[in-house]
Length: 264
Image (cartoon, rainbow, N blue to C red):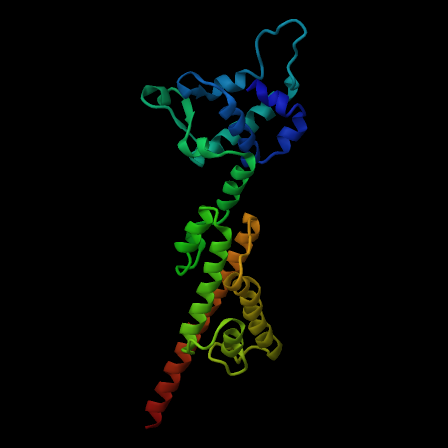
C-alpha cells in the first residue's frame, strides 16, 4: 500500500481517521491498481509500507515506532470494508488463503463523494424505521433519491394523521395538523400542560409545512444525505407519536363505552 504513504504522508492524520474514513481512502487506492486476476492479499498490501530493503535514498514514510498503531488502523479499515461487502473473498481456494477482491458495488463508486453518500446512507437502518416508511422511504434513500424519500416520509405522516382522526380529504397539510392537535382535537393529549399541547400542534404543523408542502408544489433539490436522514427520522418520530395517541384514544373510548354499559 505504498500509495497510501504518498496520499497521506502524515501518520497522525492517518491515525485520526475513523475506520470508514480510512476505508474510503484505501478503497479508491485499490481501485487504481491493476492486480493479477483482480486479487490482492491484505498482508501483502500492508507489507509494502515496511519493505525489507530500499533503493538508495529511499526511506519509509512512517516511523517504525508507530508500526503497531498503523497496522491496527489498517486492519480496522479493511474489516469495515469487508463487513460492508466492498471487499470479498476471492473465488475458490484463494479466498480461504486470504486473497480478496473488490465487490461489484465497490467497482461502481465513481468518486469519494459518492462513497461518502453511501456511507451516510448506512446511518439509516431499515429496521429502526416505522412500518409505514420502512420499505418505500428506505429504498428511495438507498437509490440516492433523497428528496423523494423525504417527501414520502412526510406524506406518510399526513396520511396517518388523517386516518387516525377520521377527518376527510378536505383537510390537508398544516390545517390538518392544527385540527388534529388543537385543544380537544382528536389526537390531543388533554392531560398535558397547555403549553405542551400547543407545542405538539406546532411541531406537526411545522414539520409538514417545512418538509412536505414545498415538495408537493415545486422541485426541491435535496442532495445532502445527512439532512435527508435528519428529516426522515423526524417523520419517523412523528409517526410514533401518532401511534401512541391512537392507542391512548382507543383506550379512552373503550373506558367510556364500559362506563356507559355499567350505568345502564
